[in-house]
Length: 294
Image (cartoon, rainbow, N blue to C red; front, top):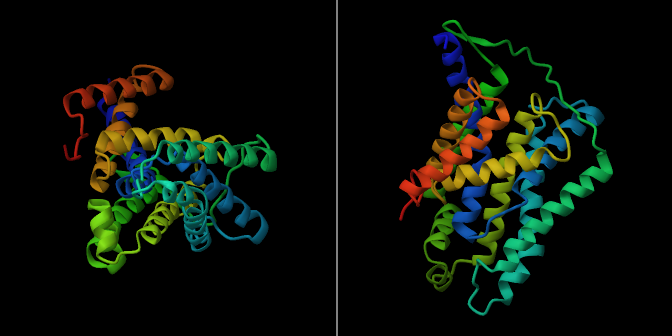
């Protein structure tokens, strides 16, 4: 293979992988605290993509500027889903058990409802948003680097670092870490556990609000677009290590680079299948993930 083509594939894989990792950060945070797999994760990203698109169509707001709307909007949606839909199921458990099967199945139901409502409201047509910014590719030697993808990659790194810093230094961040470590001890210390759950779910969704605005300029927007990102996010979280924010980024990079290189030898669909094989192989060697704790 031409070294230039291989280098281009690696760079492109790093960018896409970083975006996968950034999208998966919210899922990793939610699972690390609530111990509930959010099957509606991809659907919430789809809502953010549509929000950025319609804000441009109706209000003329550039997708990058729409962040000021999509981030708080998705935080509110996530907060509501946890407080109104999931919390009652958790409260029914005698000891505030946060991993009931009913909650896991409920998020799958939320995914089905959101996706089908979007299909009914927006139809199956593919839409896309455009930015008013001039974003020519950046040359890395002889390799052109797509600027919107580079922005998404940079956002993933900034969010991961910023979220880790926030969790360590702020009062609510420390409360979230305490609940994730020992729910019962945190409650006995006076921490409002239900509020922490709702805020955590809201933060996880707000991250999707950010990436929805950033990805709207180059990702085809359809009611089904969230499914692919939802599946990839789950794979990335498990591969990197459940509950590990750095692990999400690392897992995304591994999947992105592997698929980019594999697609140079086999069709893209086959590369995706091979990435699942790599996923299984790594878990056989490290069941807790690349950066997860046993």
